[in-house]
Image (tube, rainbow, N blue to C red):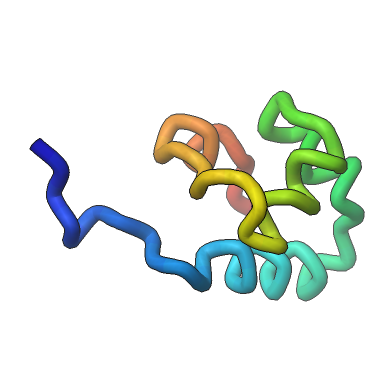
Length: 63
């Protein structure tokens, strides 16, 4: 059973892009940090790929 409160919403890609750019990070670098490609990051940011899982997002380092 899905918990809709846990859904990221349609703007998750915009948030990822905002924080990536805020840190001056390229898509390739972010993709490498989470074990994905820069093309995958681009697809997520544009909403063309499903929202990333919590496991993927929790793998990114906090600075």
